[in-house]
Length: 82
Image (cartoon, rainbow, N blue to C red; front, top):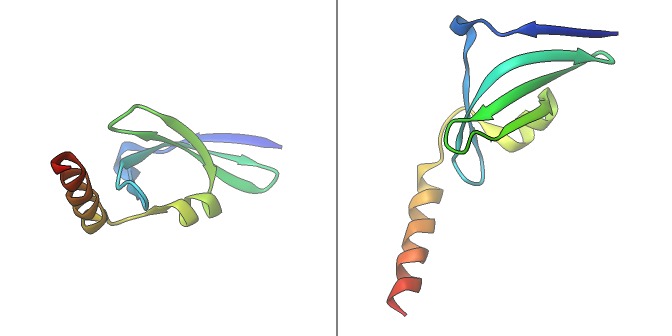
């Protein structure tokens, strides 16, 4: 059985990619075979993903990882110096 429900604007939840720190927001949720999947969209690139709740727990977090991005920027800066 297939059900689709839109997430209300009040329930808009932002999540952040653990690796890149990119900000995503939930657009809608879908239940398929008793597993809830979420359609999420990147604010930066506009990329849309369809992931299960477990997939979101593995890949995303509710707080941004700014330390990772700062470390990444330092390595880019060092590469430019060479």
